[in-house]
Image (cartoon, rainbow, N blue to C red; front, side, top):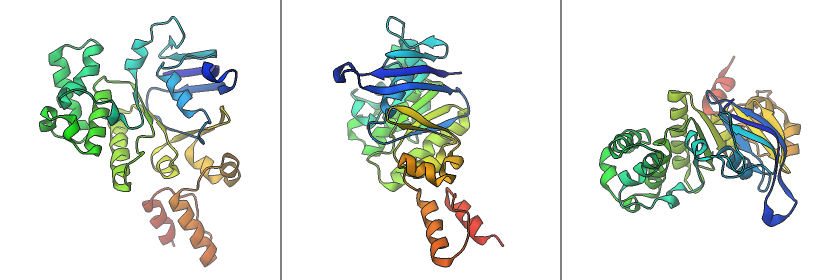
Amino acid sequence: MAIKFNNVSFAYPSIGTTLALREVNLDISAEGEFIAVVGHTGSGKSTLIQHMNALLTPSEGKVSVFDMPVAKGEKLTPIRKRVGMVFQFPEYQLFEETVEKDIMFGPINFGLSKEEAKAKAREVIKTVGLEEEHLERSPFNLSGGQMRRVAIAGILAMEPEVLILDEPTVGLDPQGQREMMDLFMDIHKKTNQTIILVTHNMDVVTEYANRVIVLQNARKAYDGKVRELFRDRELLKKYNLDIPAYMSIVAEINKVMGTNYDEVLFNLDEVVSELTEE
């Protein structure tokens, strides 16, 4: 397993003994998974993913990442290279005078030569949908969406084996949200790299993820297939999760028309197929 949690609990020293994570057990592969982590504010989502990137170490239990222990006194830098983290509003972390230098910063700090880092910058700028000509521009003269892509390119340039996304679509309009998520799905399909996504958007969960982890009151409440979770209305109510848009549309059609279409539909193609079946 790439990431393993064994009975992990965590308490922030600043808030005393109140646990932000409580007895979490979890196994995540390095390949083939697109995992959504959901739950309401304060449920432990950010605390969970910061253990995966070794930004936090457990108060109790054990976390290992590629068989390396996440613990005080251990060397944690190699973990941060292998598990990349894209924070909310990653564009706020840009600081260099050119896009190229910003993308090169991480690879150079992890041991690449200047020329190797330059080559990597030329590669990843295209991966995030920008042109090489952007490399010579100041990141602060780009649009907000372009700045976010540059920040993501800087993470990809470090060649992480697992990519963690903390609310990557926050602050974007609907078109920008789709473009950003399609970018990550394209990376996932091309590399088979595991992606872990923290989000409040259930439409994003149902359209992109193949596994969902629900946190509630600092505990792991659900870990399984997306479709199985959304087929169980009692669980959705229990976890206080929103109904995705396409499911709501079909449910309303059934209510108004007296039909019995399958309501667990996650995208337009599925809806069209269900409604046009003879």
